[in-house]
Amino acid sequence: MKRGKLIVFEGVDGSGKSTQLRRAAAVLRSRGVDVLETGEPTKGLWGRKIREMARTTDRVPRETELAWFIKDRREHMRDTVEPALVAGRIVLCDRSYFSTVAYQGARGFDPAKLLADSQAEFGRPDRMLFFDIDPEEGLARVAARGGPHEPAFEELNYLEQVAEIFRSLQVAERVRIDAARDEESIAEDVMAAIDEVLEREDPNREEKD
Ligand code: TYD
Image 1 (spheres, helix red, strand yellow):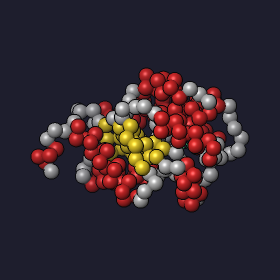
Image 2: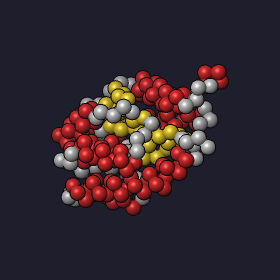
Image 3: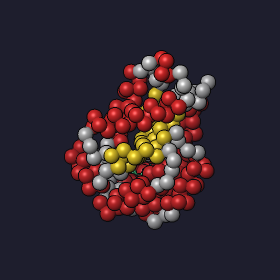
Image 4: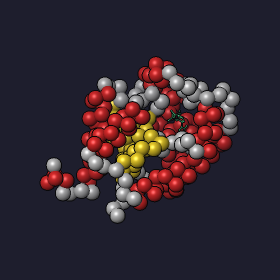
């Protein structure tokens, strides 16, 4: 069985990555591709703790917050992502360790060390789609869609720093997507970036089209 592909969707809150992930999954499924939609924080024990914390105004120490994200990811990669890749599936993941680099980096941890440690433990995805948007616009979108507010992360000054780290990340697998445009144009760029990954391993694809 040929190993699957891991494509991660990253960006600040309200950048539209989750909407685009669902759209991309639907397009791939309509072509008969076996897709797994997943994301972090997960719905598991650590993910639930993180969401609980994010939705209150009580802060936990940044060390604790970082530890929870890493434990959540460790379980997610081991129990969900890796088995899907082994089974040859295309995994679309809403956030991954680049979020730790950017969000916990903005709490004062060294982003370069967070990145190096993450790469050493979890390897590198086949693509990282970075949905670049002005955090102010992202926050406006978050407010407009309603749903639970997460005061731990949804604060403008903080998200400006998060966005800055996302923008300065130097990883070859990153594709920057201008997320300030309309949903259709963004979806086109997303599919182009995903197709590039899928075609890379499938030299016969053109003949089949
Ligand atoms: P989010 O994707 O918004 O989840 P949901 O909308 O399902 O609640 O993630 C919640 C918050 O967690 C978001 O503001 C970003 C933050 N976060 C980190 O700070 N570090 C991480 O490693 C991850 C995965 C998320």
